[in-house]
Image: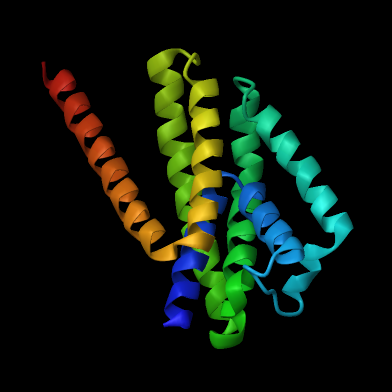
Length: 192
């Protein structure tokens, strides 16, 4: 049962990394260093190093600010196309000793795919749609919502991973439905 909870937690943290690379990494690092909620195996326990935590704080602040600047946020999303999947791989492999129970290559691959998929939908479908439909005005509120969502998802992934898994399924279903509805609406407009 513990292995299953660890896997749910790892998927939740990887999903969160697809929205914001540094929030789940920072949360895992802080919780592993200052609480007993997370115990990291070697080499992932390097995340608890004070320097690593400091760097993650700085990178989190940079990501938070850069993502709020219209036009610059799209450049940031291109750069993050490499960082977010990597962060997803790291949090998947490091979270709650999953790496000791599942082969590291499988853990890293799963994290890459989950975080990369979320990042792709966010950066190349949702964000451009927000920019186009709001003339850029919606960028800051959407970015703030993503940061809040990434934080909440990361916390839930650690505290109640089963609930988080249900929320991710609901959220993913809603995004697919929203994109399908938008596509149908665009098809209807083009036929008119």
